Image (cartoon, rainbow, N blue to C red):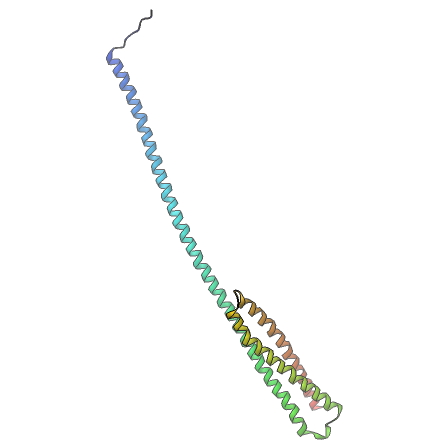
Length: 196
């Protein structure tokens, strides 16, 4: 039978104390690690809250920037629309003046030189002068039509109607300008025929 050696109580107590000391150190280390992890989690949560606040701040700034860009684009479109409307009225006014000159030329020719009435030159003069009057009155009509109806559509139309109206007014203005210049060309021909 094997003999068991009994340890003296002081040695067993010392071994238990040593074991308890090591376990308490391990517990202390684990609690220290737990405290560190809790601090890291708390720091990460605070950082997440700060980042969320920063995201909300940047979203708000982005919305303000988009609003400023929208307002700037709207003002530019409004200025463009005003530019085309003013040019339409300007070309229309000039066309009305040229039409009145050509109409006056039709009226005055009868009183100036009545012995040339009935000649082909006079017929050509009348034809060209009537054409000038017709073309310039057409320009007055088109520019007045565009300048009065365009802004109304831009204000009451669907979203984006200012852009559509500005593009359309640009086309109408170009067409009116070409007709106006054609009328001026015809007016010069009329003047040459008058002098001839």
